[in-house]
Amino acid sequence: MGRWLTNEKKYEEPSGLPNLPLSRPLRARANDLKHAIMQVQHMGANMPAVAYPHIEIREDGQPMITGTRTKVLMVAMDRLAYHWDADEIQRQRPHLSKGQLYSALAYYFDHEEEMNRAIAEEERYAEEMYQKVRNPALEAKLKAAKRQRQAEGR
Image (cartoon, rainbow, N blue to C red; front, side, top):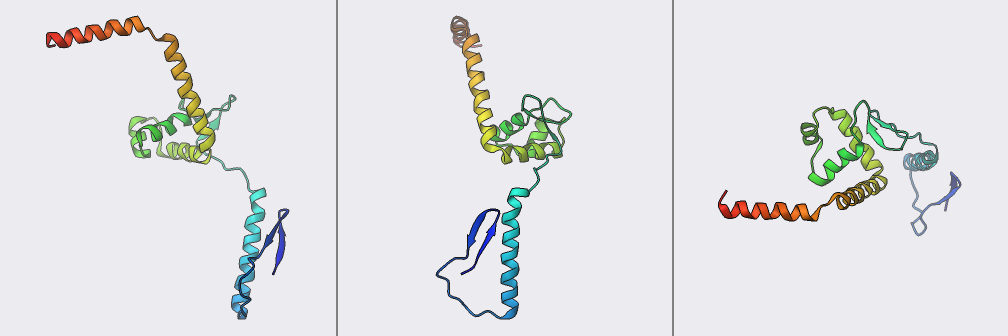
C-alpha cells in the first residue's frame, strides 16, 4: 500500500485491490500515472486565475462586457429566461460579438452560484420598485377602459 503527500493531503492507494504482478512496461505506466495525479493534485493550489478576455470587473464588483454598457448578468438572464444560445443573443444584442458573448457565458457558468444570487437580488429589487410605483387606481381605470373597448367591439 503506497502513500504520498501532495499539497498537505495524504493520498492512499485503494485497499482491497489484488497486488497483481505487473510487467515492467505496465509498472512504468502506473508510476507515470501516479506522478501525473500528484502533479494535478498539487497544481490545484497553484493554478493561475482564469482570465476572461472580454470581461472587466467594475469598481462596484459588477462584471461588464469590455467596451460596452452591457452587464454579464444581462447576457446570463437572456440565456436563462429565454433559453437563447449565443447566436440568438447576438441577434438580439447585435452590438456584441460572439467572442464577447461566449466570454460572458463562460464567466456566468464559472461563477454560477454568485451570479444566481445577483439575479435573485435584481428580481427582488425590480419587484420592490414595482410596488413603490404601482398605482392600483390607475390600473383599475385602465382595465375598465379595456373592458369597455372590448364590449364596444373595437
